[in-house]
Length: 330
Image 1 (cartoon, one colour):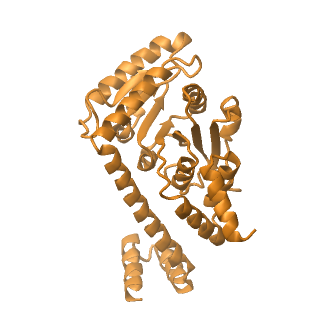
Image 2: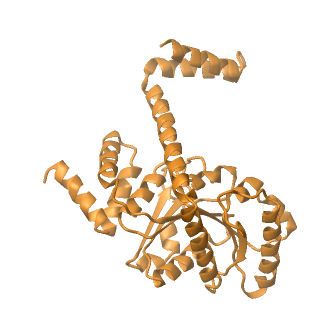
Image 3: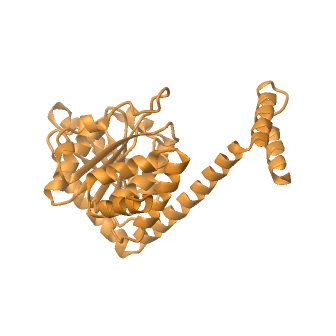
């Protein structure tokens, strides 16, 4: 079989919903090899225009809040509704090997066995925001494969985590029952982009605490400026229990309500268009930096100026201006 025929076959198998073909394609788009990048771009072009659209849900939360447990419980709930669910779990990367550390697939034992589920742990590759640079392309592949819901789990909470909002339709922030001091620790920036705040572990001895925490966050959300792309009552905070499976139906109904409202009022299409433009600009920036690093003279100039900055011979701003002037003169 020729390379062209193999690529066509892979695209056809993905469109047919084959999970093995999808896994192979995700591996391809995650590769940093130049020939693999060329193949990946060709594959994505083949799959463009398939007309399939999944609900992309970004999910973030503080370490230990139970993101994987929630995703498994929520994923099983969605599958019971007759939906196909893809999970792209972005793991922290080893600084030595670059591989995933946590291995989310092993922590979603029941969901990973479901034929209508696809779970892909991917190393974050130390990328700002905990979202692999190619996660966006993996999302496109899962949509082409006919998955109805794509859950994008990120490594934690922080200002940089807002990157996940640039590739999702809804952003869900998962938090644990906590007191006022912990509420202060959640950065305003992450709350401003949240569409739903889910307070997990609302069961057993923590149920009352979770209910109070939910009320605290609901009050905090009311203090934020009203967003034009939200209906009345959103964003909102809900209490859920991944352990008992409670609150899943209410959370899902709210997600559907918000998604449908945004589609009806054209915010959905406009948001996706803005996201596409954002990732185009990001690819241009990344490509320019990659090309600059390939030029021996530019690398030498960067190293020379970097050494001057390290020794205190010049300021970072002055060195950067000198570097930009050098590039402009080429």
